[in-house]
Length: 377
Image 1 (cartoon, rainbow, N blue to C red):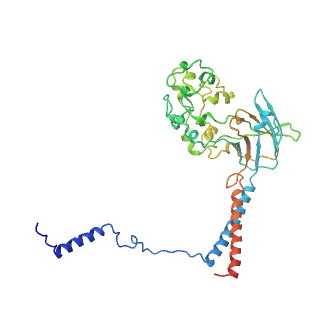
Image 2: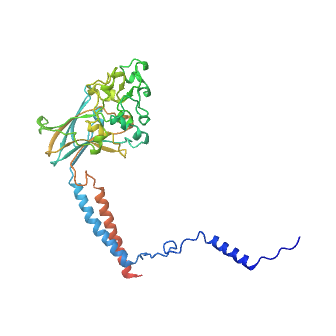
Image 3: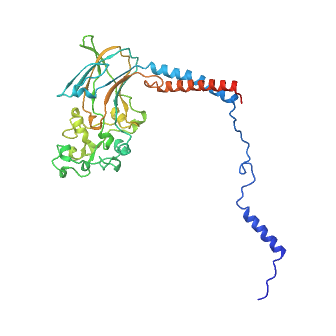
């Protein structure tokens, strides 16, 4: 085989050029941004800069914290736990006397309001150890059913495990008007469905009645309104259901109350099922709307009502129908009566936190200043 001639100089030059072009094909453009030549400023933390910053933060945070603390301190709040009332247990101050009737399940509580409460006054119930933030619990509702967009169709699987009566473990014991599962109509549903609605707070709390110094009732009552206590946007999410008018057969075998409601709401008499008289109107029941917005923490309070006027100091009485069971989850329940500031209810933590941070900045600033005076950089 004859020897190959060496490559010419022209061919070598073309090959080198092609190689260089391939090598620079991915090279970023020669701009200040892509070559990271933009101008930058990096602060140098010298004592001349750090010390004024410490003192400035302290001067800002301490007055702000004092203002927040004073605003919270002006809020008047009455709190008492009535969990043990059904056991005739002693309730702590401000409760002065309590009694319980096993027949009516009424817990009568006498308590003191030590100082006048300027309106508006807010009435809350408070629960502890109740995990409304559990993922399965939060998802267990059907927004279409609550907005009256569902009709007689079955609720979505979002309501599981309480979407239809067939999902109830002991059907005839839970719904005593049903003799067997065969008596349930085809396409029957629970209304309102889901775990959130099923666990709806069922205690009934009366208005406050003012007492005399001897404990006798007076004609003065404090009536807390349940209007305008839900979020404004919830009015479009909760609409009165048209299910009673759509059912052509037996309403009691087609639409069922949540299992807990049968025993938890004796006043509504769900023991024989729904009727046109006791069918719930979720569009008008703002306390139900408040409950359907789950709390993020296991200890929470939810508003029961608002009183626009002022409440004078003195002894008062409230009657609570004790229907809501907290022993099953190891929780407690309390009554909270409170005024409000521009920042909300009584919570001194934010003000104290600002004061502590501001004071710490001043202390560190003074220490660094002393060090700089004796050992300057």
